[in-house]
Length: 344
Image (cartoon, rainbow, N blue to C red; front, side, top):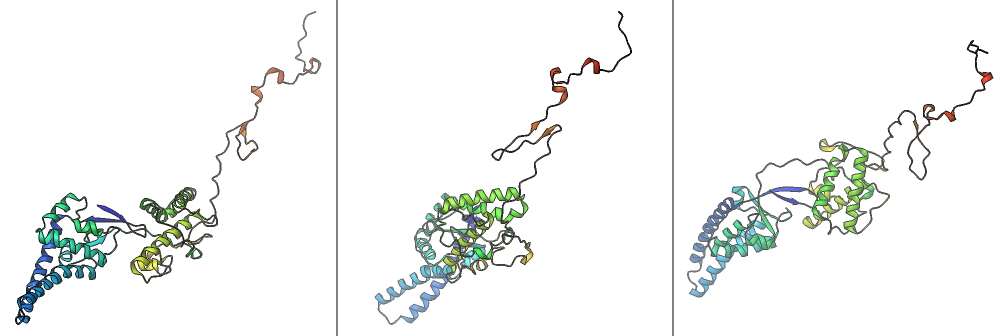
């Protein structure tokens, strides 16, 4: 299982396609491509029968490059990595970060595929797939792509509450390139489970994550923003940048909804998600939780006055612990008579 992290800080558990399924998909694609190439060649030969030999050779080479090289590139670009063979086997070509491929990815894969699959009868591609930990051939390595299986169960993701509206666009100038994927995952896991945590534990965890995130971005976390809301706003900013980079026309406000991230871009409570509220907005506390009450003091102890913010309980002196000198002295004449008179 290959764990990839997207721009929404979601861990994608993608199963890389192994050699047998990839070989079957390539075989189907080659059979279809050869059938199309033979049909195109017959049509071109019939149409160029009156031309000289040099022109016919040039047309044959152009048809070969157009069908066997340009055809797979065009199909993978238009279908976002799903050729006819991959569609039949339940496979798809994706980027290393799990996103859809573009023309440049398909061009590199197609150009190198002509060498390692067609010209060497697949020997180089088989060796590279067996050596690679994720079953990638040379075309995938140079293009930065990965062939994965699509027909696997997808786990449901938890609800992530959106940040308060007044934080929209506030962190658009942060440099998020140095934030590791592990920290993004930790932040997302906290945001999806923060309402299940104890209030003090959740606040302390949010402060630690906010401090780590601020250290990675080089900008201190704002003091007027609750740490949980700060984390949610930065995650939304990263996700919006990924959407703008992938789709181009999406804006920062429509980016969460365009990416389909649970909780982002949807009204609270929609789709079965819990509706939360609070002074911080969308369930984020605006101030630290109140400290826990201290346990009761033991019998015979009382709290000492706090000096400098700390103090320890002191014990009261008990009468039985005092010496004889501490007891009050009673004069003999004041003592009660017992009725006994000593002899003279």
